[in-house]
Length: 212
Image 1 (spheres, rainbow, N blue to C red):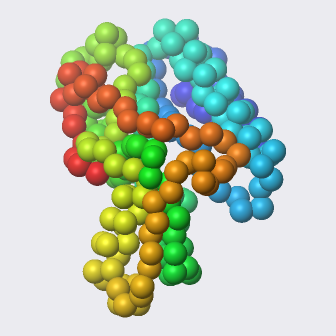
Image 2 (cartoon, rainbow, N blue to C red):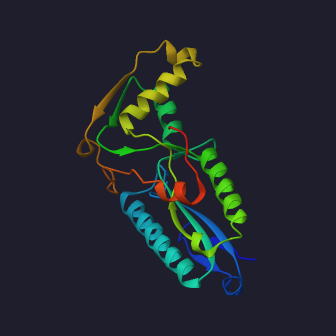
Image 3 (cartoon, helix red, strand yellow):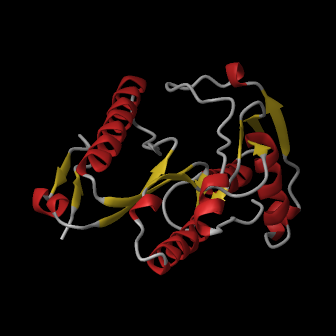
């Protein structure tokens, strides 16, 4: 079997070499950004770990392609879900703790539900199997929700929906202010546009994720 081991600190990858010499199909989810949310992490360590993640991602992609194995690499962004830290959970927490939120409004993307990604991955594999695992389908695909928004509008929608079931939040006055990227400095620079074109996965497997 193929296996991938990732050390939590150094993000060191171990590959089963024998697995690369055999026929394997390997699905890997790639996020455009790593989620490093330790509140006690210094800016220097944050950048160091982010650079390590980015470098290992490049090496992983190169290694998979060089192996000649059949593979699907699904690249996504702005992921949220029940497990782990994400923007939705952060906004819901801050909405209860504060009376004012300052959210960046000049960075665009498409919030993508982890469950939709999981279902789409299963659908892609099923479609690929029906094509008898055609090696021509191997490659890198983008997989994000349809639509477009920014962090500020996304936050407003999260709070709007939360007010419908949270009485405390519904009764609270909360200002959600739109700010520019330069008004919210962070250790790692974020892109103004995280939108990804999904036409390749649509053409290959007929997959379209719903509107965010």
